[in-house]
Image 1: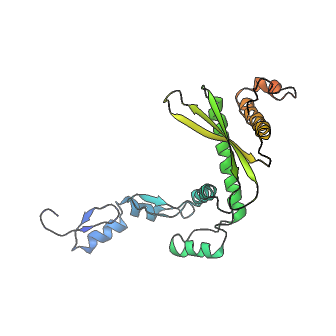
Image 2: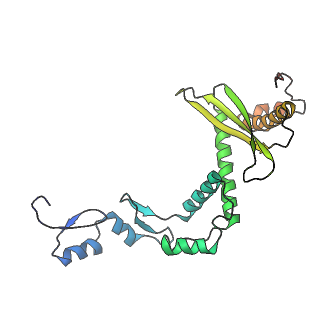
Image 3: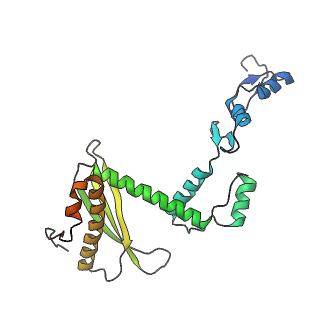
Amino acid sequence: MTDNSQKAQCKHCFHFLSKCSNTTLRNHITHPHCEVIKAQKNQNPEAGQTSMARDGSVFKYDPDYLREQFASLVIQRALPFNHFDHEQTTRVFQNTMQPRYTHVSRSTLKRDEMRLWSAAKQEIIDSFGNLNACINLITDVWPAPHGVPGSYMCVTAHWIEPGTWQMMKRVISFEEFSSPHTGHALFKMTLLLLDVSVKAVHLHSNKSETAHITSPHTHYDEFEYCC
């Protein structure tokens, strides 16, 4: 303190208390004015466990949010579905970090990842349906990771955001692309992927075009073959 006196201080709300009075300290706990202590006393066990985060805020354990983060991590790092599907991993999490942690199986993780993929796909469809800009498409052929034979073709859409003039990009297709990787095969694969992607956007944004887009006579004769 500024007057060189010593005070007790709550680790949660940093409120100063008398260091020589047990009554003051007990009242701070039994009649909580601290938000963290109050949340811990009034928490609903079924709603999740509440504690203090690293920045001093109230942290609430959410198993659904944890599963979502696990799914995102597996996708970003190309990890196997059974990365967290192990009894020893579950015990380590329960004993050292969160006692209420529950086992996450590979089937559960796969289901969560497919849900994230569907949500991301729908978000791209919605954004393209409302986009008023020219789109540039770039194709890349990638070898399969981890030494697995085969390759994949990726189609990326680039455009300039009208409001901010920022360069934006989204992967609109990522499919298996078998050999040979000739110019003609690349051209046919691009048209096939565009046919599926363009149908998805058009059918979502303008139902009046459904008959034309799904017609078997729809073709890409106006495209110039320049491979």
